[in-house]
Amino acid sequence: MTVPPRATDRAFARLAEIAADAGAPQCLRVAVEGGGCSGFQYEITLEPAPAPDDLVLEKDGQKVLIDPVSLPFLSDSVIDFTDELIGARFAVENPNASSSCGCGTSFSM
Image (cartoon, rainbow, N blue to C red):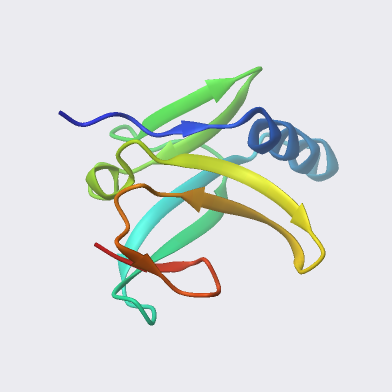
């Protein structure tokens, strides 16, 4: 059974800050693509609106989008925003990844 991914309050809060700075709604798209040093990589971008077939995670008007091709790779994942000494970024905690790269954007299954 596929468990849908979820996004943390920190991710939604940061997305709200980005939208306020931009003066317009911004959706966070989280996708999985082939490539990277471990086989797959996360592609995290901002978009103005969801596509018709996206899974939309929503809180307080903020939206995180996941396309149907990426969804199985992100089952039971947590999308978060981290602000650490090495930098601030959206990050994916993926229990399906058997290994990941030190950069945190590349993984294998």
